[in-house]
Length: 405
Image 1: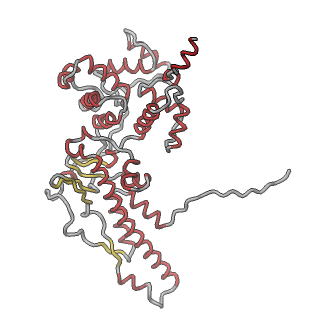
Image 2: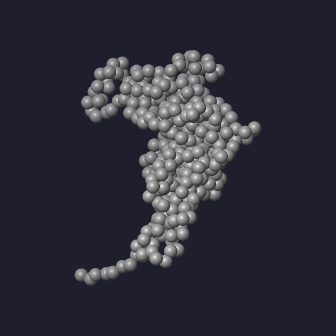
Image 3: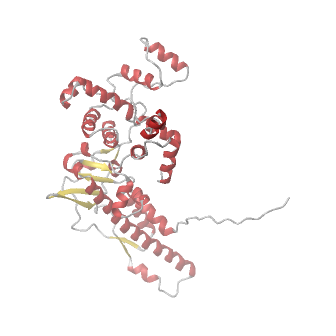
């Protein structure tokens, strides 16, 4: 047996301490950043903090602003469903408005709170038309089945989803299926975890000034750091031993890195929120029902930053708007919906005489950065109501004529 020595070169990104500080600061929500800096001020003699600027924007309220007293939580199920409807690509604007009306009348369990007749009258459509859209809504949203009228209809929906025709005695039918390992939920939102209650301080404020919206960072809590000149001068003393000098240099280096990271965080956060404001003017003018969820790529291209940078700055940050305080992620569509929208776009633009298979679509999506399996493409395609490639194929008229001759 012969031994063979092979050398391989693999690219590897090594994060310097400065880069680690920058990423940590960029990703941190405001109050977490505040705690991080407070700890650093206790340990690092080179750093001093300035008071907030006298002209810093902060709404004039009671001693404790009203949004600080509100529990911060994930969007309600109804709000979440409104966001989902906003990006479903298979509906016209008229249908979308009706679906938003359905979503806004769904309770925390996932059931419709208004009688369909009443809702149809409010929306100015026929009951038959509304029911057709409601059934489609139940199939497409997550959790599936939201919009059901009651537990019985939801149970019937679950049976149909697994390909079982509901029988008159559904209770016995379900019991048999449970014995065979099937799982049934009592209501659509079963298992949807409740957000842990806490309190938030907005990272930024969006304020209407005249006819435009201005973005202000929360400078009351954002740290403003400077170097302590007395300690800085120690670096130039000649009687320091090498260990002390190395310690001081390390602290000085970290101080500069932290100051630069906070400055960069502020710039990136401001640019990101300003881009969101520009995209979401209709939401700011009319309210959450007019939200048009964005993709990270849209914002990254707008402000000329990498998608990963925008993703970090959006993470766990909050913005106060005329309609309340929202996590920045509220303005971005779920990745699953981004993929669904892209699948729809790919299929719409394909050659109808040679439609793309699910595997081909999966390969295209992977080239665009979506790591997705063929079976997931098939699942999303079916949820969008799009048939398989064999059923989408349109035969060439010329070929058909030749066959007939």
